[in-house]
Every structure is written in C-alpha cells, then in structure tokens.
Image (cartoon, rainbow, N blue to C red; front, side, top):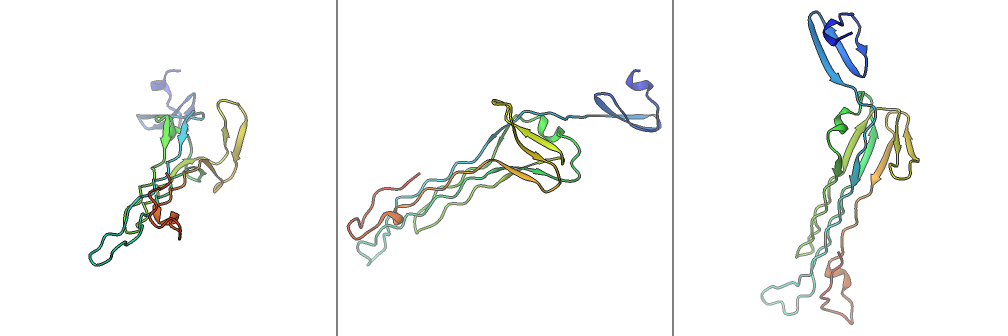
Amino acid sequence: RPAAACRSPRPVILGHLFSTSDDLIIRTMFVDRVQVECSAGAGGDGCVSFRRERYVPRGGPDGGDGGNGGSVVILAEDGVDSLSALAHRKMWKATRGRHGSGSNRHGRNGQDLIMRVPPGTVVIDANQDFVIKDLAKAGDSLIAARGGKGGKGNAHFKSATNQTPREASS
C-alpha cells in the first residue's frame, strides 16, 4: 500500500518507519547498516625553545611537549535506536593535539570523538570482513582509532654533555 493510505494506529515498518497521528504521516529513515572511516588525531609536535631572560645568561632549553591526539570511541548507549546519525557522514576524525611552546608549556590534548550507537551493534572490519566487537549491552565501548602521542620538547633532551639540544620529537 502507498504511504498515504497507511492509517493503522501502530507504526508500520517497511524499509521506512511510518508513524501515524490522525491525518499526519511522519516518515523517518531507519538505518541498520553504515560504513564509516575513522581517523584518530595526530599528536602535537614538541618545541625547540631556549630561555631568554635579562641577566640570565645561558638560560637553557625550555621547549614544551606536544599534546596527545584524540581517539575515536564507539559507545553503545540506551536511547539511541538507529544508526541514522552516522549515515550521512563517511569520515569521522578526532581532533589533533596542539604543539608545545616555550616556557615548558604543554600543548592541548585533542578531544575524543564519541560515536553513539544502539546496544546490539556489531562492528565489522570492512576490508577483512571479520567481527571486531559486538557491543551487546549499554555501556560497551570500542576504541576504533587510538590518538597519537605528543612529541617531546627539547627540555627532555638536555643532559650534562648536551646542554643546548636543538632537537625535538614529533
């Protein structure tokens, strides 16, 4: 039957979800399978910096560390009833960590990206076609992509024999 002729008091599911209320018919898409790509945030670079202050000769290295990148987390949560929130976006990317700066200042960590799915969702690798994890009950989670570590600033590389390191890791 066409959608306009559906006048039952209960919703009817036929690929789409039809909800009836008197003469008003509301159509929402029911999505039970999506394919997405996840990318974690990269860690921030360490900083090469030297303390420069009046009356302080040879102040030494003071480069700060980079922040850690954000992770992509898939979380099964009550109240989520379909994957429709994930269907319209193919690439899910967490934020990267910020770079370190002088005066031993640590870069900001990237924010984790949480993808909320209904309980009972099965996460499958698209390339190899194997089950990664079954998120059977509410509260189950999976880190789909782990964020990168932040780099070390040049303050970490100082030693008695290398008092002015001009290197930092990324």
